[in-house]
Image (cartoon, rainbow over all chains, first blue to last red; front, side, top):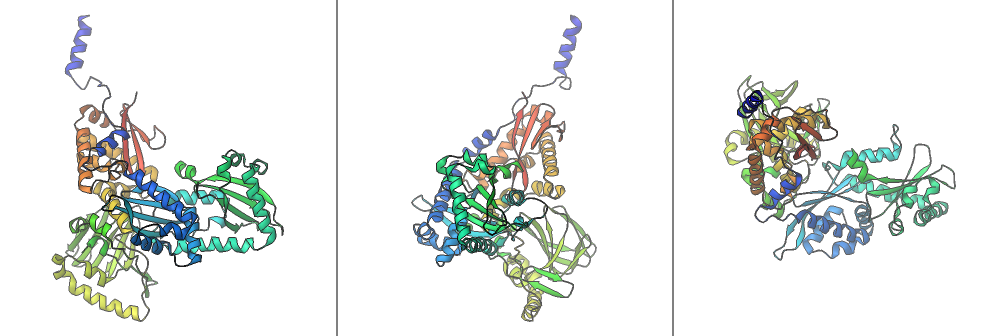
Length: 289
Length: 297
């Protein structure tokens, strides 16, 4: 007994022999609380700015000219300049870009929208007006050089698209928006050319009906049918391209769910038949990388 | 005058040792929002004048610079690259040499140094008055030469802005948490490998905490809650440092961190330190930060 008491006293006296219990540390919540204690800090700011950005994005995706037109005069100039809006064609491009743009985590008072097909990033800087309203104070469209994910030989095009998205969401393009505009034009023009053929128009409409009606399981995509009916109804064709095997693929996108795409693969026959439907959640793929 | 964003190098790519290609730089949009966030002193901290004697060496941001003649140069740091623009003389990084009018550009996540030309006129226009005496005359000479080469079509601009790789207003915010020695050192050491970066970051955090180095600990704390707060940079940096100082005061935590974390023991970006704490990392803008250190139950 005396021996045990002695060992205990030695352990208390010598910190090297004692194993202190783990205490303290911090959580992500503790960091947020420390930030909240800052003077004039508004932890809701990031959320407010993301909401402002989403409102603006949807407004432009719905009607580009009107979406920009409801902003203040300086904001209109900045947005039109960044998105290259000058006529009906460029308005269509802006609409297409914004409909497919995915919101990224804001950096300070800057919000970021990334379009994975155009590979362009729109960076909106926000400032508060004297009345306390948030306004667009700067708008820059940056691009990455065009990629060939559609034609990549080593993996299927959807895997290449997911990999390309995952690699690029964390980066902000280093070049001016010319490439993104060019890519957007390429997809819009490509789709217009493909849809000129009546049989192509018909099959495109049929595929949309399959998606909306919840019959995608017949084409290997149960996940599409599990989406709410109202959500499925928001999907429209946004891009088409020729695969390596000669068949065409069409991407259906929704302005409400830009991170979720539906890919329809057609065979290479003159009157294309739907071979497969696939649901792609770019958001999950990016997080998993 | 905003030196940080004014330093728009027109980078000139050497083509087969004969001609030069120059293209237009990304023009910085100057607006009130940027002006309110930037300041001359802030910008100056990311640029340094180098005056090196013949044979003198210098290490900066993980880059070893060797002067091969008496050299005057401008060293500038952005969130993505370390750039050394030679104004007069000649220097080298590894086997890559640069003479007056040329710049050595080393990506922070990369190991290879690239040789470019830069727009001497723009650099001259962006110089602080204190540097003008030594730099204005050689830069004016270089600018004249570049004008002639451009006229004859031997050089044209490329679309690279060495000091502001992304939009200037975003760059100013990114610089606030990426532009310190701790983060740059880790990114340079990891050579763009995310797994290596995670291991190095957690090791550096544990070592800094064990050593009571509050400044380095602060640099490694996740900046997002602070930048999202909307507070000005000085305030949130002070708050983050204060948070780190409190961590450093915790003797139990420091004791546990002295046992280096086992980088292979846990999955993803979660690491264990001393068997008592779990360190959680988060990736922001190609750098890793610590978002939580929690006791293992």
